Length: 241
Image (cartoon, rainbow, N blue to C red; front, side, top):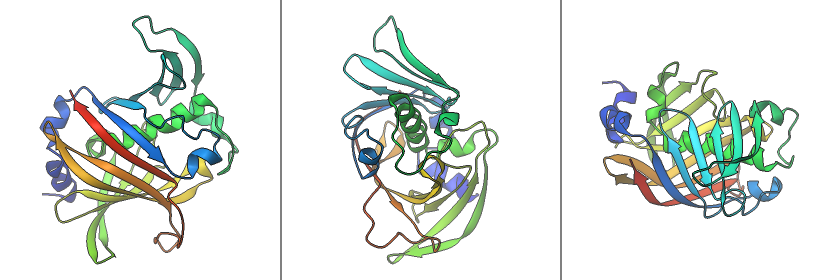
């Protein structure tokens, strides 16, 4: 059994994940990122829905009551959250709109919807997304941190999957649960980031991390001393279908 097989099994198994059509959660978020981007509080308290196998995400409400975002890698929209689904505004090829951005460049609502869309899809589809076509994984050497020894899995995502960066690394504990994910935040000035997950709980046959926090990391792979979290995400009201 490969390390990836162990991880998939710990999160409920491939068969269970392939039965899913959606995962919906309620989130409370914090961190320093949102104020720097001029969107502080916009996503706090939102409901997030993803389709694990299809890179689709919806945030409700966004930006205001009665509206929602609709995310796919090629197109983000703000639309009415009703049966009519009237498009208010949209942004095709959204990643291209971040060209030239630094860590403090403000975001539009559609850019926020894109960033939050791929980020939450990445987190909530974890680790099933690592089995999708074109994703390559390789076990790396172990990592020791705060008295823990974690196995590591290097990931190479294809261009067809929108995420923080093509190359990422996940850190896995003795139970097969992902404790940390490293990536280069390409849309935040290529900031090196360590993203921690905790509070893993089972919901209708799959496991979801209910607490997350992302920090700047240095070239030595350690968290930058004294740094505040860029993003925190607390999850509840998880519904699996």
